[in-house]
Image (cartoon, rainbow, N blue to C red; front, side, top):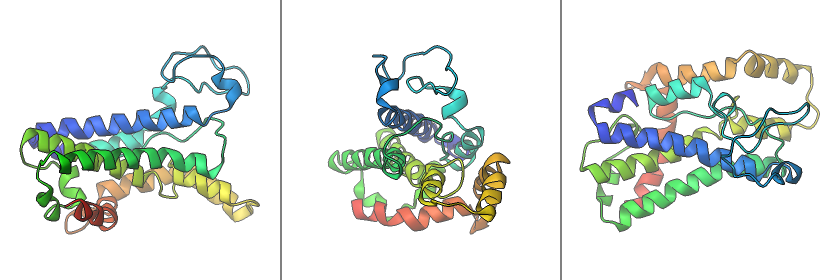
Length: 232
């Protein structure tokens, strides 16, 4: 987002996209938590009391649980980031873990649809790459805001699918490995417990490698540029 400071509307929109993605992900995790935990009748953003032994507070948005400091730094530097590791007791296994990124990506497509149907400049999508938007795009204020929110949500959802902790893709990978061996346990220790996975992601945002673009932004350009072209 810091790259977008020269475009205040884009900066605001990217911040909105990041916060909205965190809230959507939290809401999906709440919906996929165990029915016993959801019988409290409280809203997904209500404040709950201290968690008892063996349980997790599933109804409240908790900054310490749902926000990853590395993800915030990545969002500030690269325009997109990630949330904290899923710590709720999620029903549905792999499908439930994939539901969070899927809902966020679907929300981004709704923003793209509004951008096109409102006539905010769909032909511009032919000329833009996702990294251009994540670093602050020029244009009319409404155009900047809508497109930056759309790309910010899309980037957050796609990054969440990568198989590194604390991302949801890592949780999916863990669930797919039925009988983890010693090598996998060691990898989990370093990547998850020692935060090496988050450090790798942060390095991928900070260090420019491809024409001044960090690895993560280059990867998002490769994966998401066809999406922008499809909406053009």
